[in-house]
Length: 104
Image (cartoon, rainbow, N blue to C red; front, side):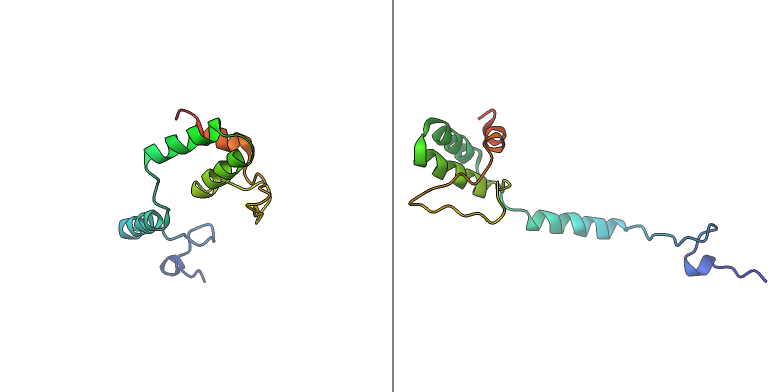
């Protein structure tokens, strides 16, 4: 009458048990995530670039801001937007740039 489903991976409530990742699989996932993440810039580069951004004005400030945003993978104001060097447009939010440069 009653069939034992324990061998098939079912728990008593009729739901399938989820397989837990073993330590080796977890370590491999962490290693893969570390390998795929971009290499951080040197701390001196960020400080110097933030000072250049803070002291620049006009098109020069926009160019530095766009480079900072691209280098540090900030979210663009408009997805897939580009900036023409002859007529630059701000691609990244001012607040995001401020947070990036805070404390430098």
